Length: 493
Image (cartoon, rainbow, N blue to C red; front, side, top):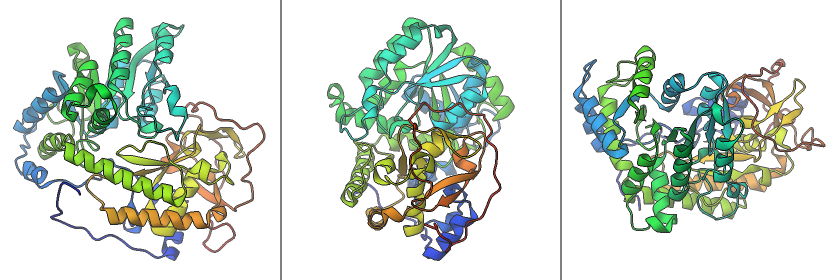
């Protein structure tokens, strides 16, 4: 059972199928555009969507809102330093701010960053700096359905080749994402992290952790890496931080708060450079864009996120939903992690070609059927088309992510998700693909508008299409006029 009881409740919105169809048309079939009151179960993200504990609310009441040198900051810095060992801690309003502050100090145009897989905003911030983000996922990650653990590892041979190769002088830093969100929420082993750290030290390249889900990664290490079977998640997390030169942290994940994050650094000179950008863009270094109450809630949340009982309940919830997906006949990235499940939409919706976005098609179908909001991680996110809408590149996999907010939904809510998926499965051949009618040059999945392509029309895979590496950001496609698709017309899902 969950290791907590509920003290406050919020009504869940309910809508009719007709209302949801109108909502989809209004937002151009982009679920990011939906209003919260139009969503019944919101699995769009686990970022900032968790429930605060009584202890966190109590900590908020003690927040010191002094502009400079607040008591809350000193408690925050002491707690983060004790966990991470980093002497320099800069608070920020969320993880992407930490990325921007760090990259402003480390990156100049033409440099390269390496990662097991860059998160989407990390990649965007790298490329906005005029640099190139290269992903080096381990070979095991290519087998989506293998139960083998630690498919979030970095490719050590590939890392060594990059660090010794012709572009070695251009490599600015290596970022290890824990857990590896872009590869299905898979964890990184401590052995892999230690070997990557040794390679970085050998070549004088700084290693940073994208530590948004550090606690969940640590828990999965204790469950799957034999050398750490008797360790606590806290012990594992502390060792992981010690292996790196610093970290980027979105506390909206494993800080279990609604806003906040930090940048942790060992190097004093680098910290001073980052501090200049922080003051100019986020706030004074003792608040960094956060209220004192936010700092206090993060301190408490970091402790709660490492509670083995809480982490076990996260794993059990994910396992329960994974079982419902398998029962419905939908394959997913195995083994399931903690923060999300990744459904293999490409395997499930075989009649929809990659450039018609099967992951997004499944997301729209789940919303239309049961009011469930989720997000595609496939060719809408990573692909590229020409001005006529024909594919230039497609993603390696067509996935749909069901993110699990922390301490927010009960098992009966997850049962509703499973029942909705079963209903979609029964009529899966009628699920249409989609085409983009309005695009954006950066992070297009947030703002693009789409329209359905009726099942059987324009959904076949074009001859010669193949999976390629993610395209560089920044190329603006030609926009075609938006043609609203009204409910009831041919092709409405």
